[in-house]
Structure formats: structure tokens, C-alpha cells
Image 1 (cartoon, rainbow, N blue to C red):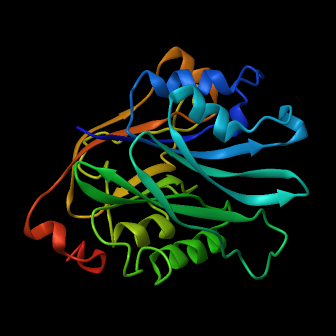
Image 2: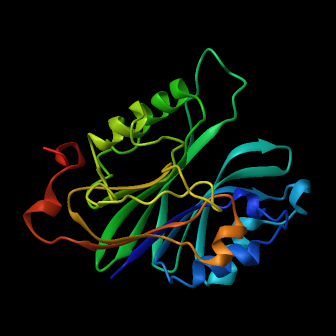
Image 3: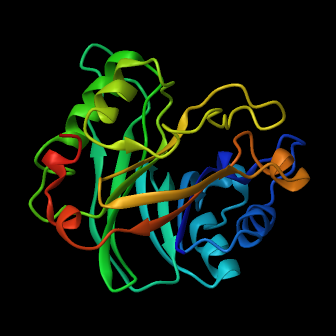
Length: 255
């Protein structure tokens, strides 16, 4: 069954202070995901040795990469990526709105790729939302709007993943959960991902449309994962439903 993994890699800087993209790749490779969504990647930044972390990790995994820089300073970039060994196409990559009253907040973005899985096109959106409540709400509104999840090309099956900086009691989370299923919603004990050494908060999420059946959810808690980043990866194994349910539009996913 296909697997998707979301992982905030903290610019590949581990909790031990060591900078190691190869260590991030090793954490991911052990679980053999079909699609990987990464947040907080440095590309060509002096603080991390000028490495293109997105391509370095993709190359180590034997995957193709789609990268979007939510922040650019001259030749230096910082952002998110979707990696996969499946046939895929980048559909959209763009910044998300911030909070008008705080224009100096860190820019946030998202990218959307169409990935061929099991003879179907799965629409995958990866994002990293802001730290402030007001900016997260604006960003969720944008993602649910006509340019992203509400776009006519964003047909089921659809998966939205990323570091949302939003706990399950937050308004941003609840707004998303009214349109898509949280992959962990039916678990007796949902799995936290942050901080990696002692995970207490559930801020990394996988949301799916109705035509996707979640088979297994796991946080990667290996010794290597606990030190490679300040977040743990979240892995979801799923199955794409056939027939009537798969033809419903995203707008009716939670009817």
C-alpha cells in the first residue's frame, strides 16, 4: 500500500547541533514512503554550507523533487518540497497570505503536486503555516479557497500535509477538519511529533479526502529520528477507494 511521510527537517540541523542532510535521508529511507513532504529546507544558504538540501535528500532517496522557496534572500532560499519516485507534476507553488497587521512575519508558502499512484492522480499539497493564530487562519482560508483545495483541478483523491503549527483544538485545525479527514482522527491515542526528544504536541498533520482510506499511522520514533530534527516524521499508509466515493468533489468530502 502507498505511504506518505511529512517531516519538518529543521534545515537538517539535529538536536545534537549537527548538520546532516544524509541523516534525514536515512530516517526517511527506512520507511520506504512513496511521497515525502518536507518543511524547513535550506537551499544555497551560507548558514548551512550552501547545500541544496532538497536535492541532496532527493538524490539520496532516488526521488524526484519539487521545491518551493517561501523565503528568498539574494541567492539563498528556504522552503518546502515534495519528493517522490512516482511520476509527478508540479501544479502550483506560491506564497500564502500573512497577517496584514504584522507584515514582517516570516513568509509562508505551499506547493501542490499531482502524483500518479495506483493508476490514479493523487493531489498532494504540502505547507508550513505561521506561528500566529491570525496568520494561520488566513493561510487556511487561502488553502481551502478556489486557488488550492477548491480549484477545479484539485479533484479527489487529495492529501494535504505539513507542519501546520496548529493543535487539534485550534481554529485553523478545526477549519481544515471540517473539509478533510484528519488521518489520526479515529486513533484512540493520536501521535504527537514535537519536540522530537519528548513529543508532546500534535502540530504535524496529514489530512485526506473521503476517497482515501487510512490504513496505518505512525510517528517515526527511532533513535536516529529523535536526534536528526526537532520534529518527528509522521507516516501514513493509505488505500485509494474505487467507485462512487472517489468521484465526489472535495467540497463534499465531509457531508
